Figure: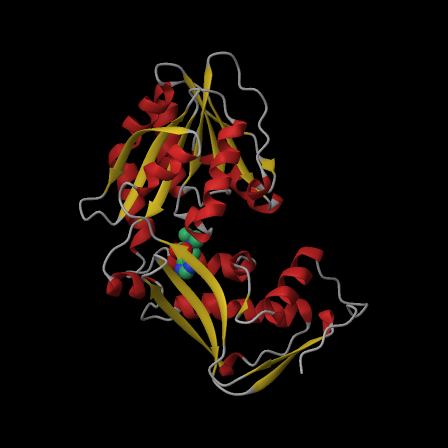
Length: 327
Ligand code: AVJ
């Protein structure tokens, strides 16, 4: 039997984490939110994923930027000055290509990374101001999934919002649309968004990208349980859960799950919870939606943007779409 009671005093847990974990593990099927991946170890594992041979997303998007960033920046600027907002603090190296292109066109570029993590923002600010002269970093500690507040830009200055890396893929289609509508509402007519999305492709390429031979993605997925063990005093037996990656064609998404290899009970003392697992029962940890070519532009249009141009690699693995905030 699964029970829930009052959180045990003595273990400090954020309200957000406590409610997400108890809601998810008391649901059927069980789930945990993908944002839980990104503690310090998980962020390092994600950086390793981006360098794996099977994980084509990061290097494909980077190659699109290295070929086309000048054109992207010119179209976004439209002859004026640009200010660049990034949703998520950005692992910098793709963002750097765009910032360099902007610095080539104007003396100073204001870069506004938006992230919930103040430490991630500090790191990004330090690195970017050191590496690219001419960029002034103005970080914003904000949860952009709950709306976006931007100060008025200077006269004649346009904003370009970067939402790259297929981050939007973690959201359900209706949530993704709402997020883009919120971005539109924070912008002025003529401002632009650059959206990077992963595209539908053959199943074996997709599955390999989320189930690499070196096991880094498996470690990334299992790290969620390591985190719950540490932060909630839970007793997940890591050897009794296995990484699963599967392509859900009907919903056009890659899914990650953790499957229990036996019937077992897990205790989460910080939440005063006991959770039972059947043999083979799974915890759904992530969805990564894959778009059809053309679907990105449709979604942007529905959110109040006018598509300007979409760039893809020659194999049509990944798309970067620029769209203008309509009047
Ligand atoms: C950071 C959400 C784009 O969905 O591909 C990588 C995270 N999950 N491997 C993705 C992830 C498994 C990644 N995003």
